[in-house]
Structure formats: structure tokens, C-alpha cells
Amino acid sequence: MRSTLFAFQVERKRHIGNDIVTIVFQEGEESSPSFKPSMIRSHFTHIFALVRYNKQNDSYRLKIFSEESVPLFGPPLPSPPVFTDHHEFRDFVLVKLINGEKATLETPTFAQKRQRTLDMLIRSLYQDLIPDLHKEMNEIQLGWITVRSFIFSFCIRMHQRYFL
Image 1 (tube, rainbow, N blue to C red):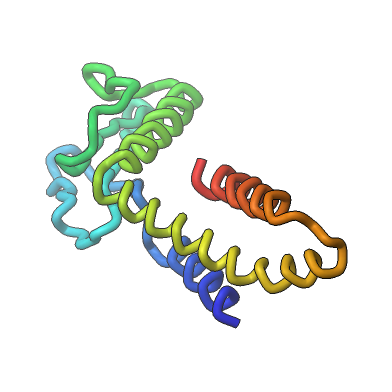
Image 2: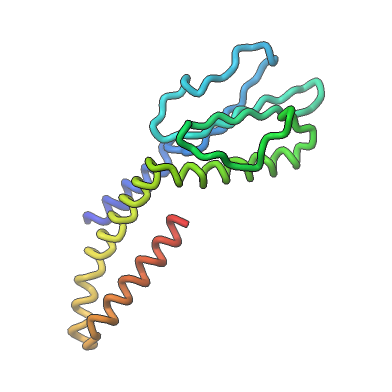
């Protein structure tokens, strides 16, 4: 029961507005009031991508805002940050924001959260698996080294699946 509740909480946290990167589409002329990241309060969002579409020349303008703790990440924005090729813009935004998310995960705040989540996940797996493993050990006479290596390899696979 406990691990089911834990899994639900982890799943819930992944889906309710807890995004590291947020894309903001802003309509209107360049002279209209601009977006300010401080308009949105979040302890989780570290990067905002502001996208404006210009109907006159069928182009996109991109601005990137990030928290001070996030290290620089590429690719660098062109100067001016205007894209007339829509496919190039799509590819650029995807690469830029994926790199931004990866850079954010290296900040102390996220590194601690990731480590804490990994520790909780491993503890939960251990609590769920140990009773079954003890039962199997008695039935099949597995050695403790084999059981320990099974738990270790299982935890490594889970870490790679969810955190890499």
C-alpha cells in the first residue's frame, strides 16, 4: 500500500504544473507589454521560453529567461533571435529547451531533489521486494550475494529508466 501511494504521489507531481521549462506564447505587437517571469510564481520552473509570432513576415521571435542558478546552455540564440524557417525554429527550440532542462537538473536544488527521490524510490522498491526475495531464498536457497546483486541491478535499471 505504501509504495502504491508513493508511486501515485510521484506520478501526480510529474503532471500538475511542475515543469522545469515553460513555453509562453505571447500575442500582439512588439510594443505591447512584455512577459516577465516574475508574473508566474513557481519554485519549480527555472526556464521560460517566450515565443512571439509575427504575421507580417511569417517569423518567430524567441527570448529565453532562466534562473541565475542555471548554468549557460546551448545552442546560443542567433542575433537577432528571429526565425523565418518554421522547421529550423522547431528544431532550435527543442534542442535549446532540452539542453536547458538538463542544465537545470545540475543545479544544487534539483540535484538534491533528484537524489532524495532516488533514495525514496530505492527504499520503496527494497520494502516491496525484500519479503518476496526472502520467500524465494527459502524456497530456492539463493545466496545473499545473488539477492543483493539482483536488488542492485534492479535499482540501477530503475535509476536509468527514470532519471537518465
